[in-house]
Image (tube, rainbow, N blue to C red; front, side):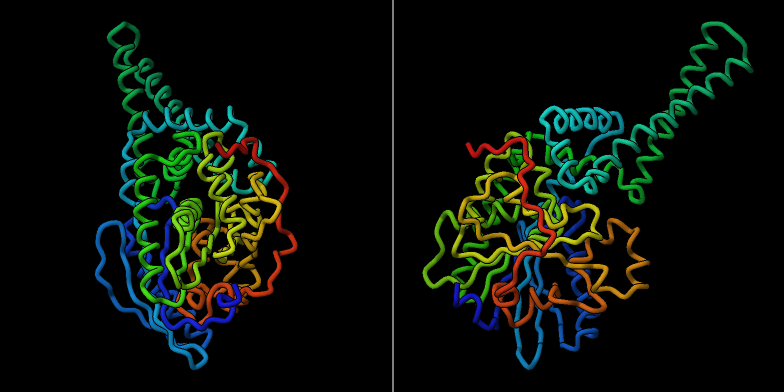
Length: 408
């Protein structure tokens, strides 16, 4: 570990695992380009990007920086599972309502919902959004359809043919309204959030079988990078991708690190790990959390922010899940302090843009403190060196809340 805290990085491999995101990974490169350029100008260093061929379940680019007179090169790789996300979203409106009922039942019947509400009510508002909105949309559609049916009866009189016409007209209007709401989802995020929670809950906390295979492929890429002669290998998991990153790194460590491997680091951003780890069949994730918590060949920093209403802010994912070993070392739980690292006017413009704030970890800050995504991914310090000697944020939550803690 001493070597990890003193080494200067000239070459770094970075593996980024997105959350539940159906969009192509190219947008992460463009986000990195635009926000990295802003941050470099604000903080007074040089940063440039170049394209890099990628294939299979990865997409990447190269970054070069010059910070405080030191040059660093980073190879950024997005580990892609957007195709699995896209496949899970191919449902009609009626199927979405069936999925809503099933997902609510899973979270309520297992006790996971109440445990997460006790832990942090804020993120559960994101879970309540699709439920409330879908029920509200259905009520609007049904009332409009009923009104149209009553209008048909009022204008055309009685009789079974008229009643059939009224039902047909009302039902058609219900379908049109619900489909219209579905088309507006790029602004409302109702179906998107439903599918996100449903994907996590589908197997009661177990990883989807296709995703589990993908995680092994991701681990193989990380393992290969550890033998390439870089100065640091950094795995980043954002949002629901934090759970995936934990299991990928655990799989890498379980197979043993190559001889003379560089420092291995894990950075989890805006994590929502309890959404999965609190479910009864999440034994693999709980085992992985426990194994990483005591790993001596790893640096793990967990970064969240109070302003991010979708994450479990300052909740130690190992401790709250109830799997912390007596000799727990990781993660180091810190706050990105959005409100302090952004100008007041910037903060005011963003504070109600909940989904934009959930991506602020990957963006530029007006007055960055010790969190700078671009220096972490492409700067001259290892993650261990950057946060050497740091203690948890004072408001870290470590009380056990998970109703399910079994490892087997």
